[in-house]
Amino acid sequence: MSGIDALAGLAETSAPTVEVCLRALRTALADVGEGARVEARTIVGHVLGLDLTGLMLGGDRPVGSDEVARMVALARRRLGGEPIQRVIGEADFFGLAFRLSPATLVPRPDTETLVEAVLVRLEGVERPVLADLGVGSGAILVALLHARADAIGVATDLSEEALTTARGNAERHGVVARAGFVRGSYASMLAAERFDAVVSNPPYVESAVVDGLDAEVRDHDPRLALDGGADGLDGYRRIVVEALAALKPGGLLALEIGWDQGESVPALVAAAGYEEVAVLPDLAGRDRVVVARRSHASWRASGDAK
Ligand code: GLN
Image (cartoon, rainbow, N blue to C red; front, side, top):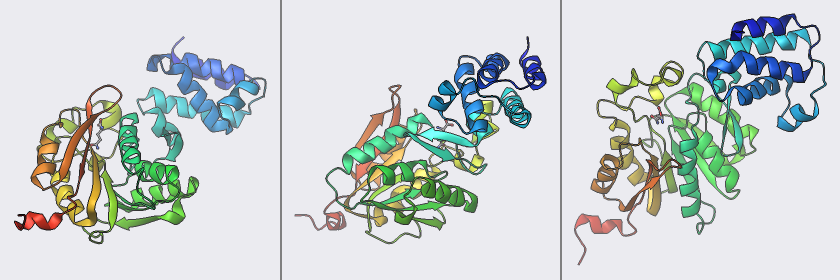
């Protein structure tokens, strides 16, 4: 039975139960591969407002025809090639659910490496002041503020729509009172020497490569969040300069990078005058994060060191 036939069958079943819907959607989504079982749960849970426990305990619950129709519509979009997170408008990141909009990337598990690297390095810092440049859905900043109840942070983005989405996610996770949202490019508008950590997952894909990305990325993630210019490094060139001014002496810079930027980005960071530049791998062992510190003794850079 093809995916679409399985869906038609589901739509015609009178008063199916949760269990019947799960099975039918799993069959329908078989074409998406190994994830079919999980994605079937995601769609059914999303429409019925149930988490995994609710789905497991509520297998006998009858499902109304309008709910079935919504499940069928979502499964059709998935079969049409939309990523599951776009279909339900939500993605999990660092154990929290984030709403998405067309102006935001789907947060990637790879980016959790960046959040972890920052949290470890902020352990000794009380009431840290953070900035997330190009905040998108807010995943990084909200995860950080959620993990550190004493932190405050500013989010910047070129996209008003992304800022609205990020603010909504901050509200949802109870951190909005500790977050500010500012429209603009990277750190250009931020106060000097104010931040304990500046973090960013800027667009870093080479312009010529964007069109060759997986269709699920190319056709559904915003180009503004992917395209890093001819060599993929345009964002970093701006960020290293602007963040240096925004950071307190000794403050932390933490950047996500592409798997093949483990030499180019650290070189830019070091050339801008940062110290303790290091590259960290993601869970798959690929270069994914660059960390560095603004020098404690920044005046030395003026040549006064003896
Ligand atoms: N990691 C994303 C991808 O695989 C790119 C994200 C970015 O450019 N910041 O396409």
